[in-house]
Amino acid sequence: MATENDHRPIWALPQPAGRKPRYTREQIAGTALRIADADGFDAVTMKRIAAELGAATMTLYYYVRNKTDIVALMQDAILAGVLVPDGELRGGWRDAITAIARRTRDVLLAHPWSLASLNDAQFGPNALRHFEQSLAAVAGTGLPAAARFELIAAIDDYVSGNALHAVESLTRARAAEAAPGMAAAAVAYGIAQLQTGDFPQLSAIYAETAQTGQPAGPPMTEAALTSQFERGLAALLDGLAARMNITHRTES
Image 1 (tube, rainbow, N blue to C red):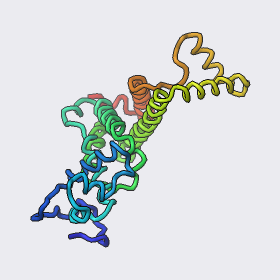
Image 2: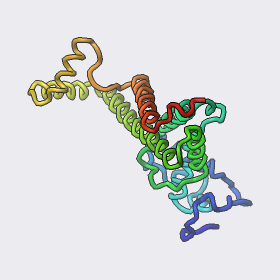
Image 3: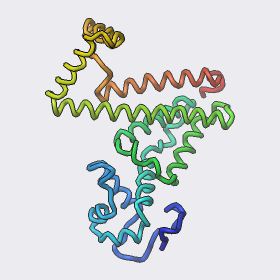
Image 4: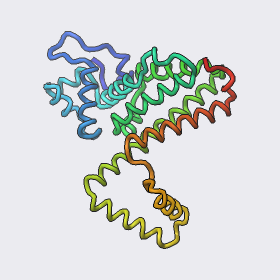
């Protein structure tokens, strides 16, 4: 049995065996994810996980050493969902990396708390598999290793940033729907600020959208946010391909 002073990642430790009740790391991770999805990351405690599993809290320590292990298992479970079936990675580098980007964003939106709560998680086997898939996706670009890393990093940054923005927008939209009076008051305040003349760019956009009948402000629905993501991803890939001179290298 590993101790707190054993700093190896949990995947370097053997799974406990021969004891009842017996749980797997996948069961523990799945339980922790369900708690976080329902009640937020702060609700994930050893006591709560044990209760959900129907076990005593001390029993859980036979399978994990601490919450660091739990967080590592949670991240690895999320990254298992990010992995793209091999059949979807055939074709050119753009199609492959686009498939990975879309799937990653979908998984992040399904677990919105993960964007800010798993930054300290230890990398596990599915993190390695995800990175391997990303490298395989851009292998045909003919770029040197450093440039391939840069290409992947740029796309990862875009996906995580876009997912964070989408979560914020959808949260605001739900809050406005739940409290229309508060939303109306916020809109009234904003319009009053525009009338001061201190915000000429915002005022011009507001006037333009009022004339065209288009919604004022950024997209606030899943469909609109996804459409914005797709346009931005295509533009980013266009720019990266041109900057890295890979448009003519391969699209096979």
